[in-house]
Image (cartoon, rainbow, N blue to C red; front, side, top):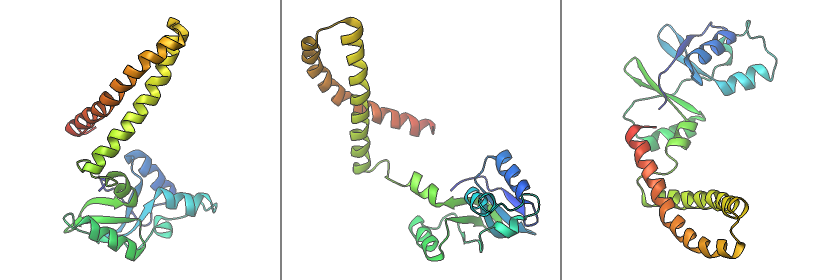
Length: 190
């Protein structure tokens, strides 16, 4: 889920919603009346319903452009059940609440980005290894040709001979380097 949840009143203008989203650096606002969530306004809705239709930013209210009703789930609900619910209801986001407290928003983007491949699955590791290897080979191959042939002046024949050994080393090390980066990113949450 994405946190924090930022809320706005239903009578807030679209301009106020945009300012709040920019200030808080969020892509969605929960629209509330009292303390009850009644809708969600997203960047996409702002674009689709306001900018493309030329509606006034100061006259139109959040309640006029929000998606509703708000689908609410609990923090410990299973993701597959939540995704099924989102599909059934035809919504792109759900509000996660514990009692009356807003815990977070779960969007289709969150699901696609964060759950595409389990980082510890064998297929995930193999996929990252292959992608890392390919990227590493493409980058360093081009870079090496420029340095060795054009700058250093090594003949093409010697370059090809040394490239075979270099290729083998690159294939062996690139995926390992990628896994090391993954471990560091996960450890330091970057």
